[in-house]
Length: 415
Image (cartoon, rainbow, N blue to C red; front, side, top):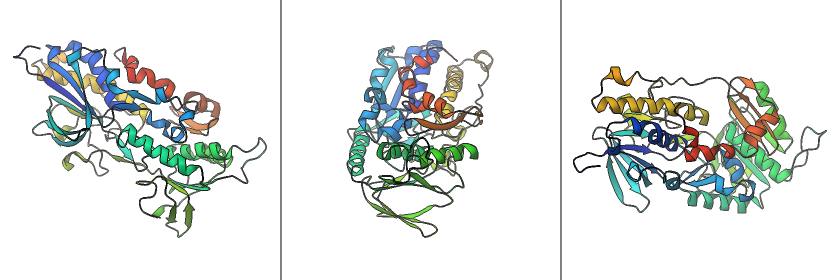
């Protein structure tokens, strides 16, 4: 890049599925097509310098022996080391403020220093935090491992566990803990009558796993019963005492009070009720009522924010939070970014092509392992047998797929 050339930063906030994938895709397939491509640089900002397979947390939180750690956690800068030196920069820090009018992002670096980065284009891929620090990179890997260590120590003496939430995370946690602590009922028994540890799932719905049809949810509940898990339906957690149990303190005993007045005593309490979008650094005018970024569901642009600003993944309103929705959005987003960059460089719309449209696949798709040998789910509207759920996801919670994803090999071809 010559001294007279202005560097154009494409800032990507977030270093998980959406952020890492779009960075690879742009470097592989968009940069080579840009005039003066050497003037562009990807700046990837992430709270953690390691990317992890977040869906694996329900099993990984129990013991390091259950999943290969070298596949579970992967260093982000190493994943991009093979690209031209000036085309990629990693910033280990957290987005503190976005000024979409002045077009800059203020980053609080790991060292505590603040850095303001001007951007030519911006992708918001900051994801969402879980209420329990056991279930994702709410901070960095060190914080996650400390949370796991505290939980594992308390688990040794636990006799009662209460899990709030009947979605996939809550059910997967219950299944993993149930099999790990209680084993599984014999072939001719539908329930484990005398579990070593009493595990209870509390869900507000009439069925667990609301994305899946009731018949699949019923099968899941039967599998849970075989590992000593009971389900309380149509009930919400009103409050927890102490308040920090399960959130700030993952090893604390808790009293869980339900809305109907029932009181549950828990040696361990795990809140697995939804997620909180990581959008605190954004102007509220860019957000929807659920705190996700108000994103054009077709183009993935954040129209209110100005030109060349986009959102993808759990932080975006464009689709239901799910990994398969994120991955299907990547090529669409990259195409529209390329189009916008070419237009900004003076190319005519007629020469750069039309917008590519994203369409969420709303067919019934969700796979939920229950313990290390069973599972329920559906893919593209078709119910899958337990063996298929185990084969696809339950063996290692997608770790067989993440190697190609993190390295960029999954995006070797333009799609």
